[in-house]
Image 1 (cartoon, rainbow, N blue to C red):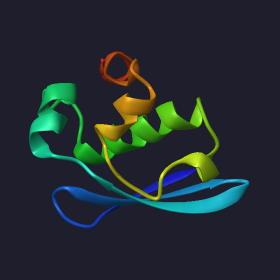
Image 2 (image 1 turned 60 degrees about the vertical axis):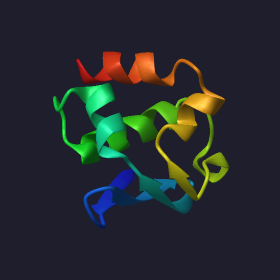
Image 3 (image 1 turned 90 degrees about the horizontal axis):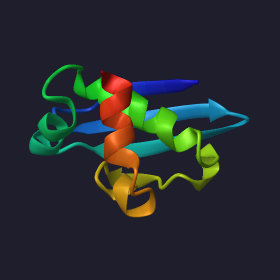
Length: 88
């Protein structure tokens, strides 16, 4: 279960309950949000889809506790393509 709490326009607190409960602070730059979504979904939906992507590849306890969304692409080069496909 993924819960997203919007803290401000660019910062989100994400709680993942998947066995262990973890908390993550994620920032989303508006220009990066536009690049990935073209405004087709809310920033919260982008963050949720991004966590779905991560949880398909690693446990919630392996996800960084604080990160900027583009960091995902450093670990998983396919991230941007997959996210764009998930949003369509």
